[in-house]
Image (cartoon, rainbow, N blue to C red):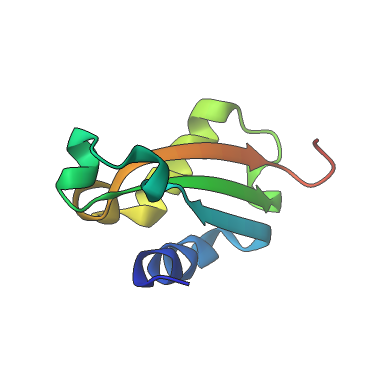
Length: 88
């Protein structure tokens, strides 16, 4: 697991996820402007009780807030699936 994924998981722990999966898709974007800067492309799946009753915008805001400066320094693109338990 790369350092960025480890740090993402550490920061997202504040949401007390029941399930968290981060996939590094950076290799699929080789040559892309964001890839040249060194920032990665990631796919995130996160299931947390904290998302119960929240819409997608609120869920994404919570994730962006938890990730903080990683969004500007280490993450160029982030595909998010954010669910409450029982949603699928």
